[in-house]
Amino acid sequence: MSIRFTAKARRGTAALAVAVGLAVCAGGCGGGGGDDRKPEKSASASQDGGSGPSAQEGTSDEPLAELRGPDGLNLKITSAARDSGGFITVNAELKNDGGTDAVLSSQLTGNETEIMKNGQSFGGATLVDSKSKKRYYVLRDTDGRPLTTAGVQTVKAGDTVPVFMQFPAPPASTTEVTFQLPTFPTATIQISG
Image 1: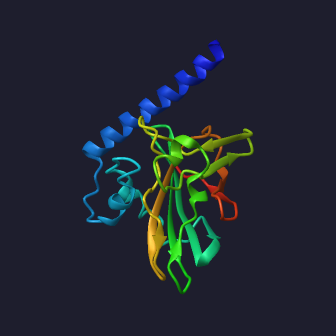
Image 2 (image 1 turned 90 degrees about the horizontal axis):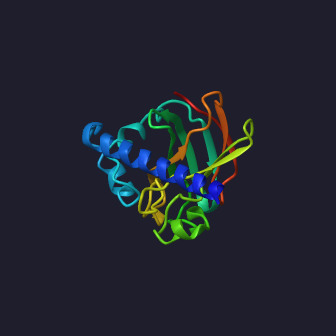
């Protein structure tokens, strides 16, 4: 019984830390860079005014990984950065290289009931730390919404959509993880910060 309580206490503490970090960042981290597309796409996942600017990090440099998915979709991972709040934010660009609009698979949301009830998202993403033999799932806010871009159901031909996903951070000694997202191949990515 005490083991279950300890696990619940850890999840509650992690959720509280994320909520406090997002609240602090929303109040003082807004980049004001005029990138209105990012918050609109992710507003239903969280109220994170601070994730918009970090989505632009590394976009002009070589990506960490480029994953080809179904229907001409191409996911370019631009950064995987540790944040001071104890989590990792993975930023990417989802581009439709196909000739027709691509409808995103519901598999991207994952199969957890709590995440599925909040609509289309990238909640099925995971990070695997093979060194510590642990898998990290997308964080959730206190209402159970995944801390990822949400509400994107289609990507028009030729369009690019900025995407983010937040995970608990592996130990500081871990600098490389495997990124997994349903319907896309896996990729090893480097963690910065």
